[in-house]
Structures are given as structure tokens and as C-alpha cells.
Length: 79
Image (tube, rainbow, N blue to C red; front, side, top):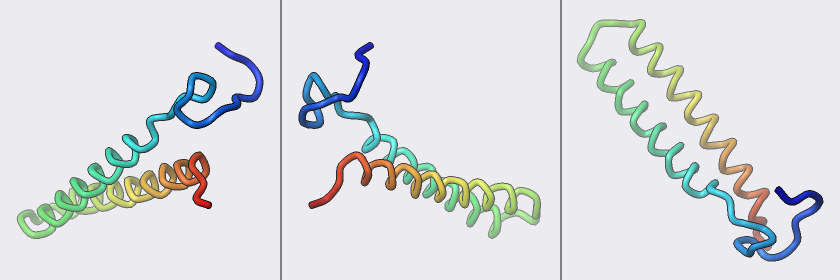
């Protein structure tokens, strides 16, 4: 493990690229799946606890999308 500040362009040997782009895709996919599950549970079941549980999961997934996108923006700043 190298110590100190990493220098060089993103994706080089000195500063390897992170997997934040892939994590953002997974986070958005998870949010879409939870949204679909919440809507399906709302329409097809009368279980309130299931709708609330999936809705809370959807809100948490949206927070994750926001967090990953902020980290990605910090890592790859736009000029």
C-alpha cells in the first residue's frame, strides 16, 4: 500500500480509478427496484407494513444515490 498523497491523472498507476461510476449505476437500479416494489405493494396488497418498509428502503436508496453522486462529483470535478 502506497502512503502519502497520490499524484497523476485518474486511471493511471499512481492514481487508480475508483468504482464509483458502477456503484452509482447499482444505487440507481436499487432505487428503481424499490420504487417498483413499493408501487406494487401499494396496488396489490393490503399490508401497510410492507408498503412502509419498502418506502423507507426507497428513501434510503435515494439517499445512497445522492451520496454516491456527490462522491463521484468530488472525485471527478467538472471544469
